[in-house]
Length: 480
Image (cartoon, rainbow, N blue to C red):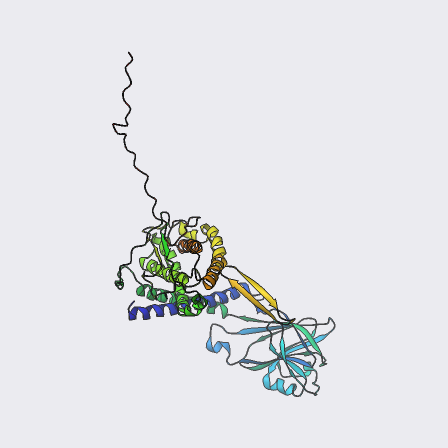
């Protein structure tokens, strides 16, 4: 790719990633707005148990800089709700919201606990010592909103601009406060925010996708650099359009595989962006196939390039350890021991596109999960408070690569049969990826095509030949 194309591609990928983030935030906001409100329309936090040996529990530094209507006219108000239940049935409890200055003056020198965090595993407090005894909270006149009594007390307050404290006390101002509390908010902001985020996400995804499509090789792409020697065409398997080959280098280092994870970090960073674009463009291709029955050629070439790049990196790394030649940074086919290509389909089924990625591919996805996922681990207990855990993941392929790496380390030889098996397993995985990514309608075969080369076409059966005169039977003898 030329410099301008690279800038366009990177810019498009950044827009796609930002768009995906906004889409996730919009979906989350919409889900909260639609499904996590109670019957009164409040989004409510889980109830937590709060205790204090002092006279009060406080939540300080609740700050509203402006009234919501000042910056969002369509959201005229935000209602906050606090529900507090005393730990004992006969206990009378007080909950109030007050201006910070008034609450500070009321609780000056009073022993209390300030709620610093409500996270896991439980609330965290900052204890404020003191020896002053406060007056009964219900007798104070500065509360912006308050509730008092036995049983569950519910305080509802329309938010106003200012700096506020939430105070929970026993109604008689006695020390030792124990309650269960939750907080909720009711606002018209979540729905519009979700809609705005989704609109922005769609705009960014569309713009980023267009930039990627314009940057990747397409029908009018510039010719690839001529290699030092011609790259032969990949042979096609006799039953599947995905061609994957891998050639084991005869002199693979016995130790370099131990540090390849570090050497591959630049490729991993690039592949994160490329795979984000791959997913987005596959969604675009889904709609195109559904409407036209064709996979957009430019998107197809880009997605094949991502798979090709991934196969080179994983062949060098921990899917095969087949070479010590560093993978090139290119989407194009290259003179490298690991190569991949997929035949472009002229037509694709518009009906299959609805079910093949998730329903029809399900048996293969379960197999691929075994080949590439899972893991094992060991835990070493060093003491009652400390343990050391060692884990290994990567599924069957990862385990077999570990065996190959250990064989290299101790014998300086790569088991040939093991390499053929690993290439067969990787070939299975990439056939499934191509099918799930809608790049072919050919269902992946349930078999291992072992070895670095694709299985060649089946030779035609020998043509039948008429019998020669010498072999032809003679006429029946004439009876005498």
